[in-house]
Length: 71
Image (cartoon, rainbow, N blue to C red; front, side):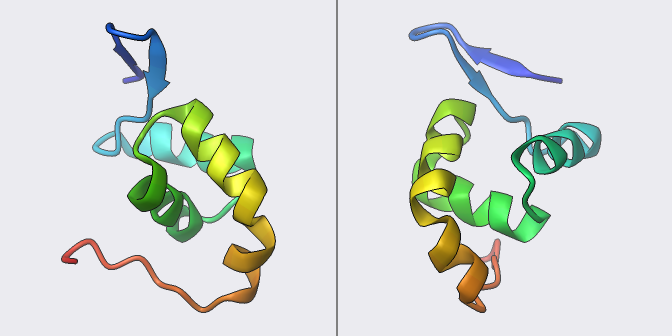
């Protein structure tokens, strides 16, 4: 379920919703790993994720970084 931050009206990704994660991976044309790395650095705001991804896409695609949720 898509969540909205009521303070600044941002759309937030609900990572507990597999269908939502899948949708945003397809929309952003990225892997789930890349999505979670972006979220690690920028939070779960869709606007911030898109911004981080666009600025770092080459770095993310050329690195072997794997998201580790236990960190």
